[in-house]
Amino acid sequence: GFGKLEISDETARRLQAENGKPVAMQTMTAATVDYDCTMGLMYSKNLKVADLTLGLGYNIGGQVAFSFGGGDLYGNKDTAHVRASPMPYLMHYGPILKAMVKW
Image 1 (cartoon, rainbow, N blue to C red):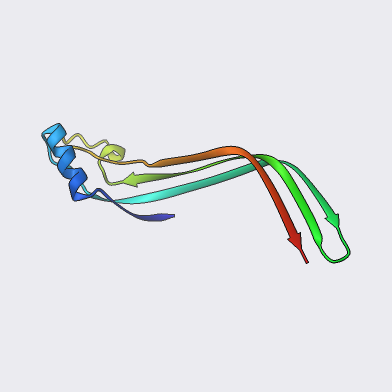
Image 2 (cartoon, rainbow, N blue to C red):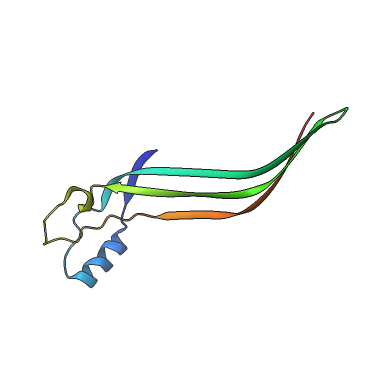
């Protein structure tokens, strides 16, 4: 999806204090990518009153937000400003056990 990504005033102040230059842009457009993959085995049983499904496998997934407008992606050569373009990334992985009942 797409949305708005902002660098807080406090973060901009700290970046300027550390680098000696103001932040080029505090508001950017962001695109988010989310992925999820599960591989494993599944067993289903049709009972008289319900369907039972059990699954055991391994899951890996994550989310990342790409920002547009911080200066880095456009090759901006402006050296008078800090080109801040944050890219938060989350990842999860591990074994997974699922049980589903449908009646």
